[in-house]
Image (cartoon, rainbow, N blue to C red):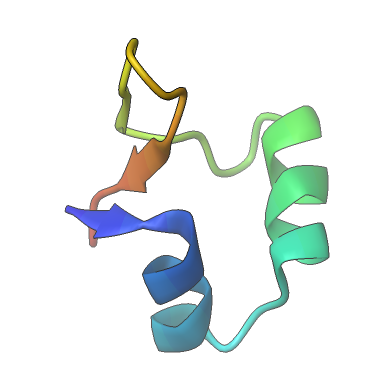
Length: 44
């Protein structure tokens, strides 16, 4: 699993683009840490 920042680097996208994809429900986080709300993405 990757943090949103690492996922953006691997996928060659910006964090803003990632948030837009989340809003459109095209790319959703695999897990959200309930303690700090960090989002984690899978390579799938």
